[in-house]
Amino acid sequence: MPLYDYRCESCGHRFEARHRFDDPAPGCPNCAAAEVKRVILSAPTLAQGMVTLAGDSRGATKEQLQDKWAEETPKLRKKLVDKLGEDTVNRYAPTLNKRYE
Ligand SMILES: [Zn+2]
Image (cartoon, rainbow, N blue to C red; front, side, top):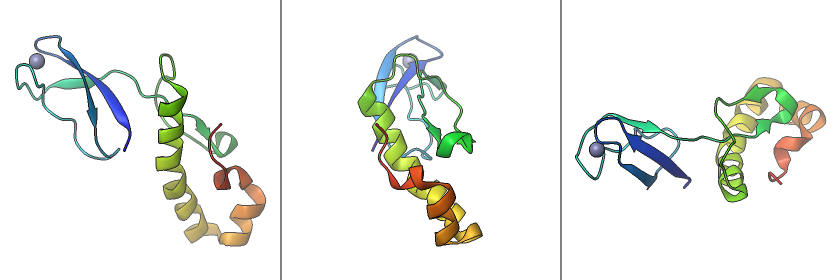
């Protein structure tokens, strides 16, 4: 699971939390406020610009980018395969079969 950075909106505490991409943000461990803001999220451009995830790659480590890629790519690939078929995806989006480097 990827690691996310958060900053608490109410006390300013910064913390990290590891959870699934589509899980809700955890509350602040310092003051228990629910309003926390995700500080980064880095995202590589998938499939040569076919899908660009919102985010900011400044400050992201290579490991975070790889996590993100490993988590998002199979989902994206599956959607495309459902829509276009395995052959088409292999032909037009071969980068989806690779790891982010
Ligand atoms: Zn707080």
